Image (cartoon, rainbow, N blue to C red; front, top):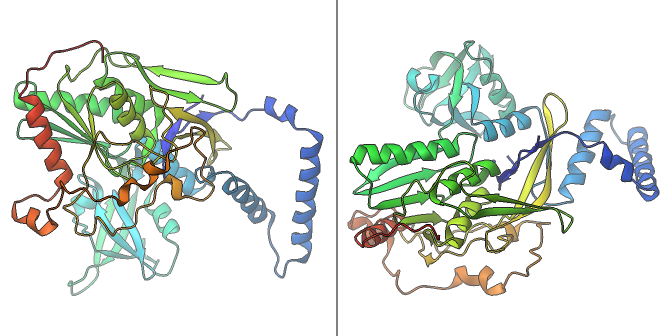
Length: 443
């Protein structure tokens, strides 16, 4: 089964689960075997002569990782905890405590507990330092090992010893693991506008987007003036869910095409394959994107833009136009391999260039928005080159200053504006929503 994943980070792109293809092995020619002989010669010399003993598993895993790293930034090999993280990104749930953690000076620090999870209900807080797990001292140990120990079978217990800044003595929490369901979609009503924030594309994103529209309508008792779909800092996820979200707002037509190595290897995906009609009923739609909007996010923005179904607003997106397929390599290992490029309905490849907004609106409510380093696909080593030759002006447009957005973050804050892009989107929907809307099937 092929399960495309569209995501930017090596951890959270487009994914596909496929069986290992044995037929392709038949095409290995004589030159390939010569190269494999060379590899084995190097392998044996390292085993025999390296200053310290090295086990086979370490050498083979390093060789696999090096081979994939030589291809592009998104192909990789995942096993153990990396494989678990990949599964969480696609499935959207895991057995655990509901904690986001990082490592600081060798200690495991809580970034935040997830709402309505064992950790949150027990009273754990952002800034807590976890020093012991089941009585074992973990400071100075591996963050991955700590995470792996905190995850586990739902219904099982684990004891956390926590040092909290300001507390006189360490705190003890006995937690019972649960299935932690990530929430890829959050919604609220802002004025008379429906706001839908999509933070990732897991197996639930399409259904949750439909539910968000239904709940917005229910809360208002009618349809809103329009909808804002916030895809900022959304690194991507499953291709199927990008199609499902696009389908929510499109009545018909192509959403995206996927093109492999051969010219004839083209697969197209259309609206109304999952959702009948346009659930937003032709009301105004604004899609917010930024430099962190990648892959699956760019598919949604590109489909809505190409069909003139809504306005894409913000700044140029990340520019990841490739699809990774996940090939299972055992019970807890998988090969993540770039197998195709994707194109928007107009035949545009976002690779390198990204999605250019219809309305360029910088986030001027951030004090450092001009000076903050921005990394996009085109900045990554060994990124795929756009075969359509991206115009350099597209890649350099971020350096231009727009005189329309001259207010400072301090001036905006005095007006109560914390998120200028969202504020601008709300104003735009208000203007568009006040005009008579005519439902059209030709979008």
